[in-house]
Image (cartoon, rainbow, N blue to C red; front, side):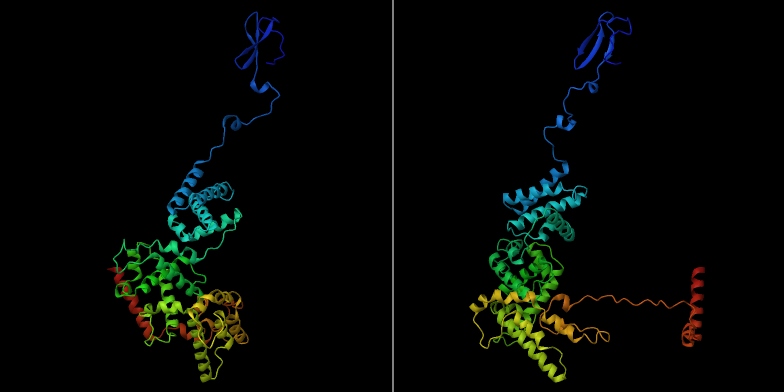
Length: 453
């Protein structure tokens, strides 16, 4: 009933007054006491602006349960890695910012768990804390491929320019994961973490100079360098007979399958350089090369130049003997240029250390070994496939030495209709010989008898 009614519908009296009952206004007849009209809250406009229910009841918006669990997971990972408070605060801020983005709101819980580890990883890299993606994957028990994909998506969304880490920076932290101190293993097997890190870094630098690190996951390379460093520091019979499996069990770390291949590749490089040491008279093999690792690392730049020069002279002698230009001089001399110019007098060890940086940099833009063999096979590409130039040089990227076999697409026969004439030789191939007919009949008879039984 409208609030403008002036008479009571029951008794017809006009003595009507407004009676406010609590917060609801009413119009009541004074004579009979009946309610003429009831005021409705929505009908009474007071002139104020509309306010949402959440703004009138909630003081502050509380984070959701998954966000709270994610922040707790970020905090737990930081405590496990023992990072400082600055990294922990950065990680939580990045997780909160990424979690509220539309790209990570409607995703699975597994991806949100991986996102927590990625936030810790990017915070560690920005603040120069040595942590690898493999370590984060191990803590989360997640696939490294998934962790890498979430990490790349996160830094792209948040517009973070994270620095690329170097193996040498995380080698010290990685070596401390191996429990091979005197407190954990016998004295003949124990090794100091500082000496182990120094030798492992030198081996990784040598592996980088010889293309072993190129395009490889860093964790297996670090495991291989730690294992070879541990054997070469004290190459006694107890260490040399210990395999990688037993070493990982002793050091209480999980073995990585690619580490075995990296060990074989690094031993092969060490053997190539060990054969160039003038005072070593015996044949250098993977079994006895551990005794020469210290000398190889001390004089690795001179040995690299000498090995490349020896390989070039050997190829030239073979080409002269066969009368063919199997390898142009540019292909071999370009590798020599990567490690510096050849000097007639061997420089000292101090000069090697001074020239270490300048010897490693020219590789970035040096493509001479790649371009020369392609030019030689340009005319005969249709006749025969291009030879693998990586097997003719001493050191080459792994993708060149062991290329993947590419599937050859066979051209479709579009002219085949099924009405073509069949030659006599093809018809003869479909007809059974008398012997084949007898054998087929005997087989059918044996099968039928076996089914009956």
